[in-house]
Length: 193
Image (cartoon, rainbow, N blue to C red; front, top):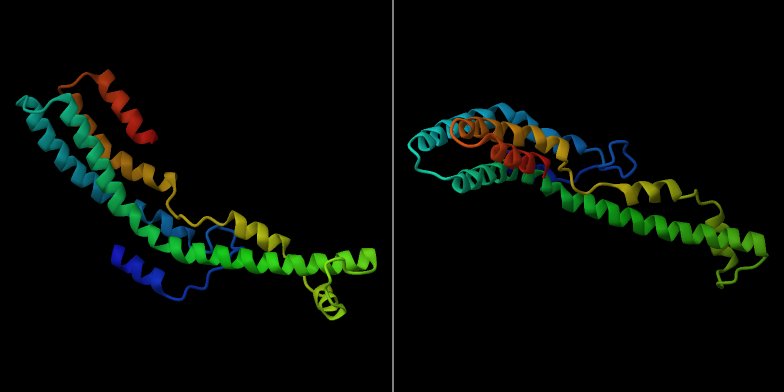
């Protein structure tokens, strides 16, 4: 899946800075890790069984258990969410190019307004430049949309189901032998990142 997203991100994408999703029209890519929630849950159940066996044999400590939980959450979130970062470059380029063009157009438009209000151009713009700029539309809406464009598609809401699927079976295994108060503190830290 990561290679597919990488190849898609390398294509010439038709992104729109003013798209209502706030991510150029590809915000849906940030939610794709949720498709793997059941797969992560199945893997976590297997990991939980292995941990439960070690806890019953008293071969791992609470510290090791915590390290395993943290590592497992990092691995699952990293493998499933990081491929969405391939879209950061095209979205960043779209944002910067749109901001540059909108700023230039806004400057020309403001020069035309200044000239019409004051009767002359203080900055030294020619009459031809002023007449061309007077017909320009206001780029304010596009500028604001570009400024608010999200270049990172990964959202906390899409990582929470994956994190829960990764942690809960391991948590259940730990609950068989470890103090629940310690486990709840670990769980709260992991899921609220």
